[in-house]
Amino acid sequence: MAKLIMTADDSASVRQMVAFTLKQNGYDVIEAVDGKDALTKLSGKKVDMLLTDLNMPNLDGIGLIKGVRAGTMNKFIPIVMLTTESNDSKKGEGKAAGATGWIVKPFKPEQLIAVVKKILG
Image 1 (tube, one colour):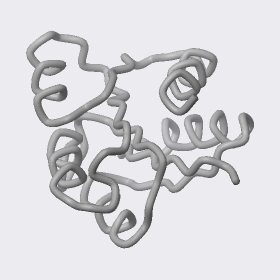
Image 2 (tube, rainbow, N blue to C red; image 1 turned 180 degrees about the vertical axis):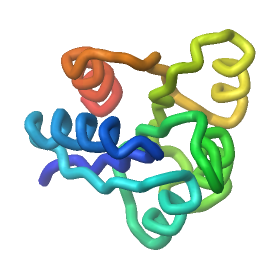
Image 3 (cartoon, helix red, strand yellow; image 1 turned 90 degrees about the horizontal axis):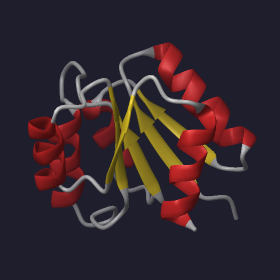
Image 4 (cartoon, rainbow, N blue to C red; image 1 turned 135 degrees about the vertical axis):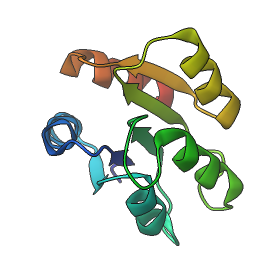
């Protein structure tokens, strides 16, 4: 069975690119427009991994990570931040919230797949 990955980003073009790249490599994808949408869609659904932007309306990536980590079903899934933010304080904040990894935008599809394969095996 294909691994299920959620991608949360307020940019439609980024979501499409990430979803397209993942699907081409055999993963199933759920898309969310922001952290709030992601938490709603994750409710009662188990995913294998979460890719999230940091800066989003309604609920940002840090809030989303905290929300997922506070839940039960997806509490221990790997969560990777996909963001234009590359400063250490933001990375520290992400790590403190429970982020597994960090990819700085813009990124190449091969880079994304390499990270996903490394984490999911």
